[in-house]
Image (cartoon, rainbow, N blue to C red; front, side, top):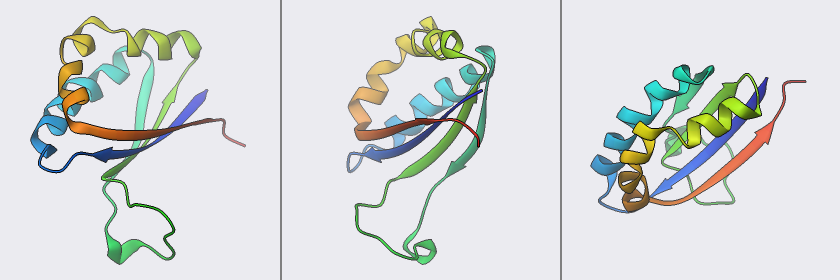
Length: 100
């Protein structure tokens, strides 16, 4: 298994565009042998210590293998809506790892 943690930062006023993209992209994860394990929207009430900007959302996703990841990113339906992601996301930290 391959695991990805994403810290997602969106542009002010672009929540609707981001959520529209997510409505398309998230169901496609399963199509490519992946699973969304966690989708979390942090709040200042839940932060113990903070030395960075708080992300809008945090995702933890697993895929079976590298080919499934590549297929997800180039999925035709996802690509049709990629403009929504580009319009709404300021930056993403993508952290790749494995379960220990």
